[in-house]
Image 1 (cartoon, one colour):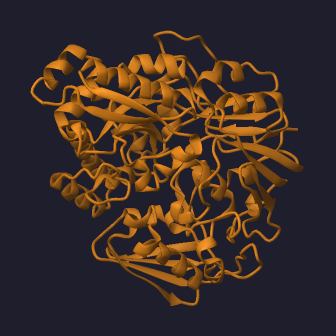
Image 2 (tube, rainbow, N blue to C red; image 1 turned 90 degrees about the vertical axis):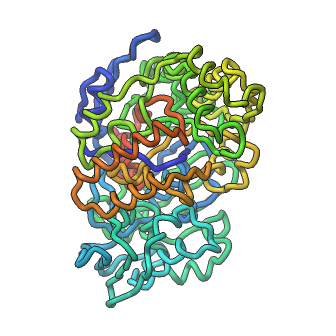
Length: 549
């Protein structure tokens, strides 16, 4: 789930381990499990899991919800991105260590501040056997720019003036003003290349169970059984031989109930899964049937304010609500200590372009401690007492439901009338792509994550009018700083601007920081090799899977 796209992982493994009291281990060893309590449970993060060794005919992987669509335009949440990372590819690629590398474009040039030129690889095949051309890349990108399509990534291209084929295998993007992020974001969903002919053929059915997709990844979408599963099939003509899959078929099963998902994993019915329920960590960590790993997460959990027309339109009410939240209680109850209270909407790992700067800045930020008495004083003159706010909640995992309950209690403590609205996991994902589903909702608890190594990716989504700015918050000072940052090519200078933007977010709170926690993955004794970090959202993690022996 996502509200925004934050954080990065360059240097993240060491930062996460230091923050949580564990040491990173590139040999695939997960950290020790401890009990609950007021102190964080020690654990270790890993950069990689042990590599897959041998070939297998099949493996089964769990998703917590069925994707609403596999159209890359709407790949704005965990379920679709987890699938598409193995099926579709982008002009550039995010590597497991969260760096930007060549992808379907073998190289790129930046001849002037307003021009990006991409040279496409020769001989890349789509899953239907046709050959990729520059025309496919142009058609794929332009779909984001058509307002009629309602792309979740449309604002990435807000400053793009043209996308053109400028050679047999060359694509040129022109912008109206400098934008250093657009290149990085072409390594995520905005840069996906689909067959232009297939897009035309599939029409409105593209990305759904009948239309499917036709991309260039190491796996093709073989079948989609609505309400049950998808099957990914090894693509024999995949261009990148370093990522030739060892597993012929990967079945992705949709298991919404957290307990059922954990039981399926621990029994061996399912071979692996990401984003495990936090209250299962102790149980799964001691399982003899598989292994639990923690990787660096690229975002923290926040309470996204989605309605500024009601009581939360007053910044004093937002701040009072933040002050009244028991973040330590959430970490203990929902995470069993596997995490810590957040200090801002940006976690330290958000500063992948300047890791030490991000770490130092985060250490200097004050704790967001609970102060109900102070919150009540702040509320006194707002006129919001007794007014209603609605918080979306779901049974996806305790980190969401416990957080929603804690926010509800905080709201009641300061005199608000707080209602919880329970939403099914698959419908909860629609909150992040379909604005109509947020009608009547004031707050969504969400993990805000990034798919590129720059804090500005998240920060720019809170510009006036951005798709990810769910509450339609607007601040001219903030917008001007974002524009300044996007025109700044020096990473350290851009990070300094990001810190100024962070200060504004803490002052205005269009989103209320809650907590940080590691990324989790479980694999049975049968398999290993999957990417344990958030890079798996765009990197073909399933192509790394193989037998454990």
